[in-house]
Length: 331
Ligand code: UDP
Image (cartoon, rainbow, N blue to C red; front, side, top):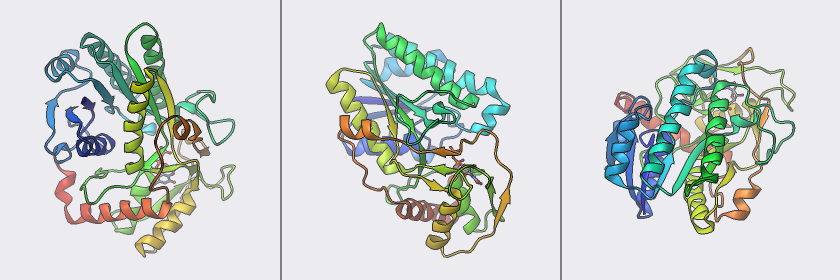
């Protein structure tokens, strides 16, 4: 089976590409390398292009003729999306529309879309199931929900089947595969905490300690990249076998607070890095925890790395590797 991955030079896309390769799929990557890395392409067939450019996508699809597309390419920073909404709608929505149009024109049957728990906004209750109300509180979440709606309408009147994965908080790395998140200015908690342990940033700031949670800091459901990657393959298997479109939460169903993450990171790294209490970051829901029942019951996915210490240990090994090879941040 041939699969084209947009954003396949990025953190999640490159790891899914690696896994697909291992499982014997034929892979091609379409990426503009704005946030992705050349080294993350490995030996995959590569189309340099931008999803905002329809003819570039159509050309790649006409040449590669994939059976499925996995669409990772997107802007993903919540705070930035509140400051530059146009940028987010243009890339995430118009880019996706371009891709879907080219997919239909190229007779691509299966479409796997990277969505996010941010589509839920501030959930009324946790854990969150897929039929909970979607009410995004920032343009990032809104842009992903718009694409979900577009896919639903298009799948109703076409041969295209979609699998939507609503990611919770993805973290960790695979040091053997030499793949992980490589960001010069990371915003994600686990990466920042580990950069603080390495002394790359002077301290970690906790964004708010007055949330309605057990210790006052935000709670998230952190999922290991290795388990997240497998979910893509199992969802693709499911939509193929059942010839059906479906939406899945991808998380473990267990949450950790910011303070808990810091505590585990101090234990793993053996560094007592400085921590400061700061103000709330705009757009942060207090608690996001997945109800993964649907994924567990409909597909063959099972979590294998659902241990917060494993996630942080693997992320730590990767950060130490990056620290020794800073060139990886450059290309
Ligand atoms: N966070 C924090 N300090 C940081 C980075 C993040 O306190 O330096 C908090 C953030 O406010 C959120 C949680 O950690 O409550 C997870 O944030 P992250 O950006 O990793 O993921 P998000 O849930 O926003 O997708």
